Image 1: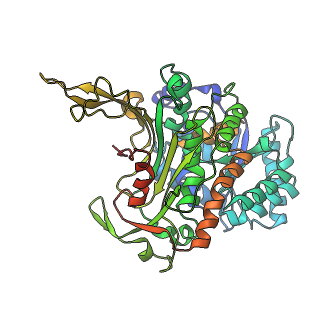
Image 2 (image 1 turned 45 degrees about the vertical axis):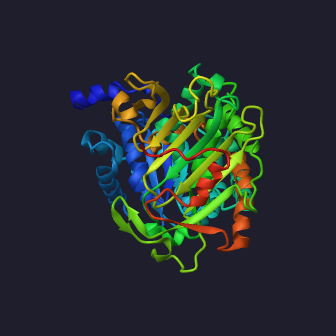
Image 3 (image 1 turned 90 degrees about the vertical axis):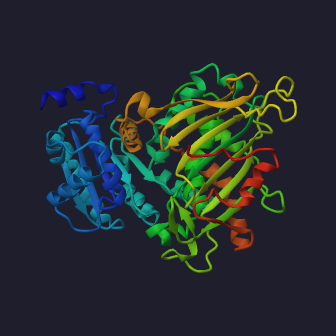
Length: 514
């Protein structure tokens, strides 16, 4: 091994090195495996955080040799990894990659998989945990889970440190009833402690740092409540349209695709009470409590809490963009929303009366994922005389992507003989402060799953609580059809009705993505 590479690896934190693990990826020929999972595992190997007894089995329906699978994964790493492919790392790692072909609903194929795992474990010579990663369309979640149970793979080394684990990609159901059904299927085969429902947003550095910013800084926690916070905004905006995903997206929409998972997770972390410890269950308990405190949404009348719309043609980044109804695979009479905004309230001691505004959409002005905590204005005594002073609200903006970082907006006096105020920003960016070699979300999450740390994963009751709030919205929209469905030009920040959600409370949307 080269001296430079050896020095780089030694500088990494080895305290979190994964135990001996056999990962089985269902959907190994899919896009997520190529773009995120294998590059993530490669970078963990680069940082010497994988066990020397690490093996990976790619499970797919198409026939493929071990060698062809290794070649395709090497190509994927070369194309998608944040680091270039290093043969010193990849060569020994690739020798432990295997491919297993078979249907997802075939018990015999899972029996063969079990025997193959047993053979690998025997070659290692110690009890080795299996991590089953389900990276497939949700239509095959059930047969995979059932066959993992029936084959005995779910029960391998149960109640030992080498107990099997399962990672499940979203969506976790389409509504409350399907989420409950999925949880029932999971829990018949696995204990909840073995289950890791993954939302990659929770692996982003800024999201992880949110707990640190809230609870490790005494300047924030005393004012993180209804006495000092005027409103909270969560934005997840994309500049792209549905593209080739039109068929999938039209069955989903913005509420299912982004709000129920990503946006609600950001809300829960922002609103939760301080956990009793950093134990994963203590943190997840407080997230669930926060979600359960949300008041049922008002869906009818002029004071509705929910706005939906779809994009029409416009300009995004100076380029012409077609409307949603003109996208490939979209029916001309579709009423699927590409944008939704929600105003909600938490009826608890900390947040009573503070509005939380959520929005997510496609084909918007800028790509932005961020949380804005807007603080209450000071009393209009010293600097509130008419139009003489223009006091901007103090705000804390946590940028999740792009340009990860934190910005605090304050009011300052402009230089000059007259007393004039101007908002100024105190900010830091992760790249400029900590460097650009930041692990990607999947690296952190896969490592956490191998190490049995569920902090950044979603618990079953959390999914059901989120769906219990949003399922009535979906049912209302299904009954209403296109009634109440607005439009917005591609390249804008959404429909006017979304602005009205805030105007009623004297608020306006944060200028996102800056």
